[in-house]
Length: 185
Image (cartoon, helix red, strand yellow):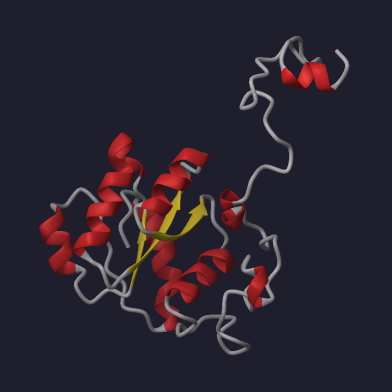
């Protein structure tokens, strides 16, 4: 796992060690060739790219190129649409929003491993759906127990007027723009 926060690394370690996973904790400021050598056997990388700022997606793409066999699970508080799309394009298998729930992160890791990891739900089915993951095609639910994780990939249920050209007016009243015309204001 690569996260600048020792606390976050400790939480993820506490989740994975009981499953029998070997956990390597890194801060993310190490040189990429050293990271690639250290993570050569990794099957899943849980990463927090936000410390790389505007170059986070490029860093993820370089990390994915250096460790092509590993699935990237991004666990970050920076989950704007643009960031999530950039992370996905860089090779992320899943994007989990912080604060994460153990069920949601566990489901993402099991899915990245192809359902082969242990954990609380592995005895039942070993899939993301068994842990309440958001894979509807696999029989899971849209919502996650206690987490926001898989919602970052879906469009907002309430479209933003700002995105469609509405710059807003007084609080609670639509401003001049497409939404104002649609609401009769």
